[in-house]
Image (cartoon, rainbow, N blue to C red; front, side, top):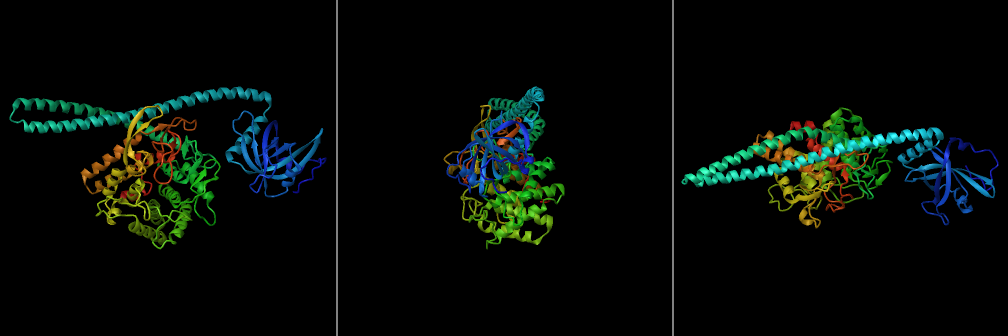
Length: 632
């Protein structure tokens, strides 16, 4: 529709206006005109108001339009940026809109302009808030007062209940962490007593000719035995308490992830508590991990809600999902497309198919796979580079791809996936894996093509994606890989809990700590990955009937899992309700050594850290089907 000239309109209201809903109150609106992404000369923030709005747009009324601005409205490249200010709320609702219709009326000595605007860009959450507020302000005042009274009472009751729930959850987490700390201390004492016993036995053997001394040593040995039994009993009692609390803690962590899922988009923001640019981002890798957690807890609707988002984002010529989206609006947050995170979406879809028997998301997985194969075909060596438009190759992406193609081939028996898997394996052999006959003064697994930087996840995922048997068939020593990771990436650091209490915790860093000026830090996610791989080695040696090695790796897995449990903190948000979660790392805004920093906030909760810890506690390897693990 063309804009009317700047004469007062004496005709009847235009038909478009019937779509707007009349509200009792006036909402102030700041607005400015933008043309082709630029601010035209003279276009500053101007004031107006609305008392008519709908889900589609608003009727903006103002007296501040200039002839130049009015002329710009005829240009289809023009948009109007709005800040709609709702009474009693802290934040304005921001949107961009397009011009639909125009009307001018003379009142006293002024011309009042009415503009019909259609929303062009607005988040779903803001739109829902706008409509809720509009409906609220249409309520008759007498009813409004009564409603407000009941609302205040209800809010008070809800806050009181919520406060109690938060306190109970916090007490549970703190008791659990204190229990793990006490267990660590008791086990250290027990180990020390064992050493003393060995020393006394050696002394007794040396003092056989001196009966008096030998008798005193025997008495000392019996005392040590008694202490050992008492401490062992205490540890057993702690273990019983731990077993009763573990399910609650696991349910808590699952609940924390579930509570943060957007009702409208299905996405979960990756970090709770971050105050930087990524605070509302939902990284797609984290969404894949959350799907696995939901599958573990048989919460299939929550898993489907996430996977449905990716179904909506599929298009005719799929070229990969962006690395991150805004969790509440589905808008792209990080436009970069990398293969690794996309592979994890495919893996999550395949785990859904495996655990439910439902093929609903097989198309999603195959779309990702076909796109990956098109990238793989461009490399003569059969590797998968980091993503479109990049030249680097990451070992972790190719390990993920091997696992993904294996899953697809198992379910579809399509030869193209067997071929793609074979090519990836060839690339890993030629460019990533260093056979175990080396002295391992350099890394046994390279981070990428021509890149021997130490990266903990490449070691853990070598076992998780390929398995110990396959590694050995490739001339690799799975034990040596894990030993190298522990030697160069294992750390013990001090960590200040939200309560202010400082604890010591052992785990794994992102990189070789000797190269990092920041000192060591523990990554819960990468430590949990190592736990899963230790668990796999324990199972591997159990099947080989090698009891000593089985016990060794089961103990390592249990030890680092206990250390992870010390890092469980409580959510501080109203959404989190004091439930348990884990930070992304023990340091904030710290260099990981791999091109990104840890999030802001000393106690920022992380989907990746929490989800992978849940998987470690449940002995779940996301890169293999459970049936694969049972058959190995």
